[in-house]
Length: 380
Image (tube, rainbow, N blue to C red):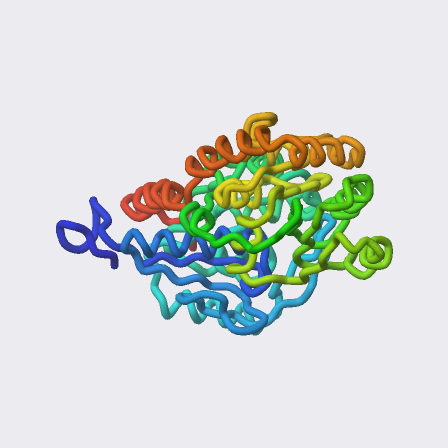
């Protein structure tokens, strides 16, 4: 049960027991994982009891996490996802759902193999699914009918962007409420800047083709000699790119960095660059840079336009166009007034996507689901 202001039960929810399920490893940085953990913290700040269920390859990165075991690397849509499809993880998921007795369960990327699909099959509490993927999905395309049957168990469906809604609705159908991703504005705004003595460009993202790091490093080769380039994270392209561009002393390869360093680097850089080639449903990392007070140059992708409007909060360039990317970076670094305008507009834009506001929207949806308490379609 859940406590209301008038006692136990509806109509006004005072404190709910909320489960959040993530199919990706919570110890590996990623957009979905970041949203799950950030939203969980914001919901707790509103006075709710929140547990996050997800695989962990190491110590859980936050409190309130129920680890479901280790993951396996699985190739999916041009990237590598760390998933837990093994039977042991599913048994842990079933046991946790049974023991915790949630009032509502929010499943992120609900059709991801492993704990997410298991939750949809076995959980009887109201289920709210949050869909993140955009662009194309081979699994959606080839398994549309079976996935539709599983998705019918959802009480409500959320998409994090219009592109995410288009992908899900075109293949598994259904109605989706668009709730854009959020950012912990205060945490990034208060970060102490990482020291640097040169005009500094920051890249954060997995080193794989679709993230466009190769294009960024090619663009950097034509920039002035006094710039510094911070390259965070790693991935399947790391060794190749370090061989190609390792002779450029301006580039510092950081590897994976903890959240506190990420926040400090964002605050210390003069420019954040997100040169992705596609497959981005939403630009959370752009909002994080804006919240930290950093100018943004990014690819002109529909998902990124949701977060940053062209020539207002960021300069956006055609994906894969190295020369256009070089010109945009050089322009921002050469014109401090333009950089200041982008920063000022970006800070306002980030505030409108605060995680606290997003938590309030989710709570409205959770409360409505709990109040009506419909049994998911497909329940026995």
